[in-house]
Image 1: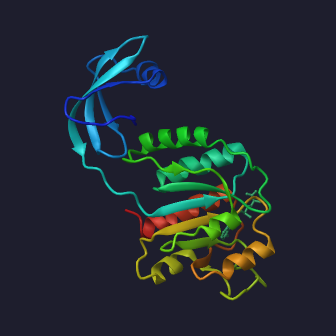
Image 2: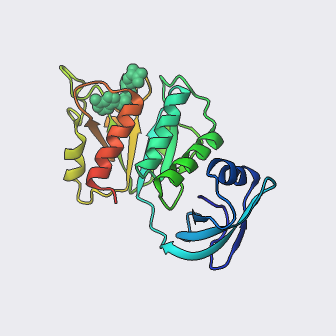
Image 3: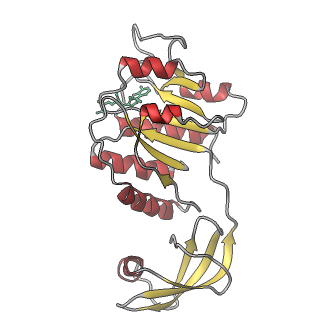
Length: 247
Ligand code: SAM
């Protein structure tokens, strides 16, 4: 269970109403039940339900089970798609270890309204389910231009380019997109930091692709010969990263 409070031997945690409801009515925990908790800073702790009633619930923190581990240097940038598919992307990116989830508005993005508070709640549930010890940050949407203008110097950008490997594919200064595993393997430090960029339902337009491919920190990659849906592409790219560089 994620808790927004310091964790220490003997600490008492009074859960907010929604979380108390989840614990008591959904997870069916009662006084004396064990619960594992984390806060993204102090590792994972064994706690026990001290009090559980209709009015609320509190936990008593007992012992540390796991030390805090660092966040993998992985950011997922994606153009928001339809609500259910955006939710899926956020959930799977959390499961697959992304530290930052960044919606990006491109020219063909159709769903520009994103409720980051709702996505953060989804990411919290996914983090609890997958037993990671820190929450990803779901950032407010930015335009592709702004994203590139504020680029963190040490990050490389994996540009997932669906048009990069087909017959007569657009070449550009970097030539054809290369398979993502080859690109990761060719890097001196495959663990990153990396940013993975996935486009909208209609893909990137030619100007965006040309701009992306002209930048020195960009690696254009293909995820195979078929055009994947944006949510499938996000999972495929993050899985390849996980297979080679994730810990
Ligand atoms: N029209 C479909 C949809 O509704 O989801 C396809 C969307 S596809 C154009 C969305 C994004 O997924 C692309 O911009 C690209 O970033 C990524 N993508 C899809 N297939 C890919 C592939 N084979 N290689 C690399 N990236 C891919």
